[in-house]
Image (cartoon, rainbow, N blue to C red; front, side):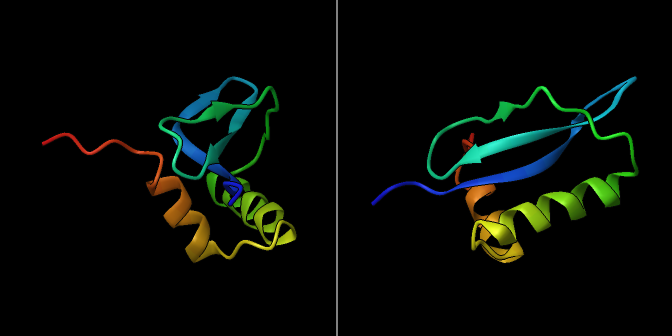
Length: 75
């Protein structure tokens, strides 16, 4: 089964040009930064990611699960 890919906004990925959208691949540790900048509010940037993920057939709930699958739990 091919892993799914989603867009998301990481709170730490922001610079003078705006929010930098990130890409998460299901089950793959870490994430990728895009070279895009969205000069808008955090909420609008998240909304744009949600729209892009919906076009990929992935709901908000599923996209959150995919992002969480890329994080390593340290105990």
